[in-house]
Length: 321
Image (cartoon, rainbow, N blue to C red; front, side, top):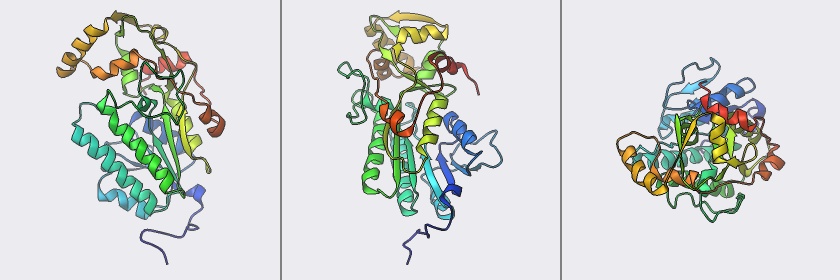
């Protein structure tokens, strides 16, 4: 007798089952969908519209917290869920952040367990470790996630990561993969890419930390590698060899202005309050301290390798596709 929501495992060849992508309308989600739909049926969930959607990609313009999300799990036999739908907008209220990121993700985990989805991939971030003056040169996957200590807006991301880790141990029948990429550069509208798009890029006087960046398409390649049967666990992702921040900025061709830290600490909150900047003050630690990761597990187990060199990766911030 089948339990609630359960169906025979042999109903469909697993290789023919659909892949569900949350946050599919983000720039990273679109790039993943466009590479994946050539080989697999792709279903997207995102409350935003999907302009230019390939006809064979099924898009549900819904909130993942709503009951209609469960209907997708009930009606489809999914091979995997790729969760990209983490909200990162620091201007959204803390209550909405918490509800979307945690309540929404908890519901998603319930559906993955209830409907026996074989694979779950969660895109976290190396920022969860936090930029700190006492960080080791390269952080491994078993290091504590301390990024929320000075940056409350990243606490939701850390809690999502922790929920996924808990799910990993409680539901071994699902191959859970947590990916923690370093600063993603490309057409994505995230803090690192926005920072490198500024006409004049501010740095902190006396600080020039080594930084790691990764091309958006290398992140997509890592997700595709993680979809392989048998892969599970936590994986740091990095791109080319690290460089000093000053060198990365130089490669953009933009001007750089070194400003004392105490001045930036005073100015940034005011600019933030008047919406004259997209960077909250705690982001300053990322251009002050080192937060680099060891990604040997991804290279050894996933078979991941970055395909874009440092020049291509940095110049990808001006990619408008």
